[in-house]
Image (cartoon, rainbow, N blue to C red; front, top):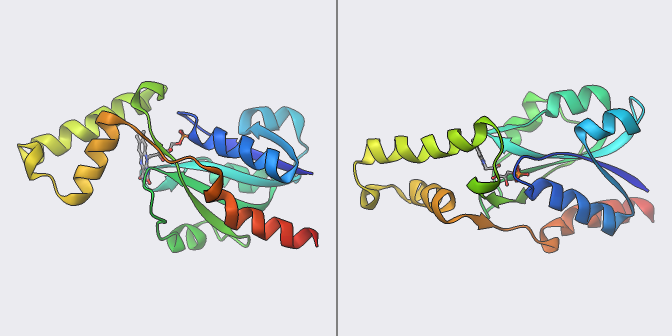
Length: 167
Ligand SMILES: Cc1cc2nc3c(=O)[nH]c(=O)nc-3n(C[C@H](O)[C@H](O)[C@H](O)COP(=O)(O)O)c2cc1C
């Protein structure tokens, strides 16, 4: 039985947390729910989304729980380099990357307007959508049309790791 704790805004990370709980056996709690349900220093797997290059509330999760593994969820399909995160947060557990997506309609709070302003700023800089760089095109597409890469297959490396521990 594993406790999966997550921080999610538009729901992609929550989806992964629920899938992981189903696959590994266990419960998925938002960080807020976990505060009521889990004791301090409980063993957890922490999943969180990336905001401006930073994993949300990772410091808080590491302080409160014993993280057996951490997974970050971002907007790109390709795995991103996470050495800086490992170093910055002094992680001594495995760190995974999961492709999430972008759904501006589902974003809550300030994040919706931040996402919209990212697009506006790119447009002001480039003057025309046709002049976006390749990276900017990916971001613009994600903001305008939305993307969703959530899939069980991306959990395979995490499942392999925990299933090997069980053996
Ligand atoms: C304001 C904002 C900033 C973001 N910054 C990044 C980023 O720096 N790197 C990245 O890979 N994804 C970034 N994303 C994309 C999110 O990490 C992605 O949409 C993720 O799936 C969100 O998870 P959630 O649906 O659980 O909230 C950003 C999204 C928003 C809304």
